[in-house]
Image 1: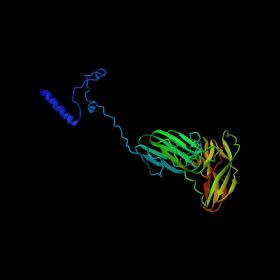
Image 2: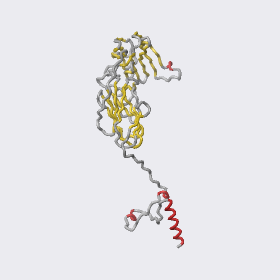
Image 3: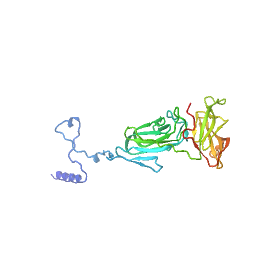
Image 4: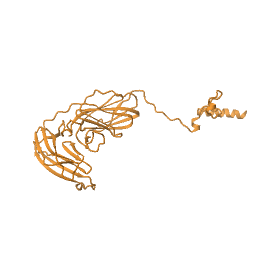
Length: 337
C-alpha cells in the first residue's frame, strides 16, 4: 500500500514537470496492435532519446523580392507564396568575351552585363527566368550550366526548379545567325513563379551623343600563316561613323585559334595557345592609336608580364579633339559566317 502511494506521488510530480505517461509499457507488435484489448501507452520522447524533427513553418502571406546593395543586381526572395514578378533592366555590352563558355550557342559570348543573383530565403522554389533584349541575348545559370539563347525581341527562358539558396544568372550578348555581332542593347529580365509569358519590353537604345564616334570592324577571311592549321584568320578594316566617318584598311592579320570576337571598340582573339587584343586608345588631342597586345599561354612570374606578352602599334589616326569612341550599337562585327 505504501509503495503504491509513493509511486502515485512520484508520477504526479513527474507529470507536473514533464507531460509523460506513467502507465506500464507493453511492447507493441503487429499481433498486439491488432488485438482489441491492447492500448499503447503514450511515448516519452525525452526518455526514449528520439526527439521530434522541427518542421519550419512557411508564412501564408505573399513572398516579396528585396533588392541588395549592388545597383539592384542581387535580389532576396522572402518566404511565402506567389511572389509578384521581379523585373530587372539593364544594357548588354559587347565586352568581356568568353571563348570557353560551354553552353551551345554561347562560345565567344560577351558577359559585360552584371550578373543577376537571386537569394531564396526559405523554401525550395520553382522559378522561371525570362529574358529579352533589343539584340541577341543569352542566359546562363552558373551552377547547373543551363542556358538559353534567343534572337532580338524573343524570350530566352530558364526553368529553375526546385531551387534553393543562391542562384546566379549570367546575362550575355551572344552571336546569333543573321545578326551583327557585338551589339549594345537594352534588356529586361523577368523572374516569375508561374509559367505565363511576361509582357515586359526592354528599353529603347539610347541615342548617340553629338561627339560620339562609332566603331565597326569589317573582316575579310585570309589564309593563315604556315603552322597555324585550323586557325581562323582575317584581315580587318576599321570603320568609323557618327561624329566622324572614316574607313581605315589595316594591313595586319587577326589570328584566332578558337576565333575572334568583339570586345568593346576592339577585338579579342583567343585559343589554347594564347590570345591577342586589338585596342583603340584616344588621347585628349584626338589621336587614336590602334595596337595589338599578344599574350602567350605560358606561366608569367609576378611583376614580369612582359615575358608573356608583346605590344605592337599598328597605326595612328588624327580625329577632332574631344570625340568619344563607342561600339556601334547595332554591332561592331559582321554576322557570323
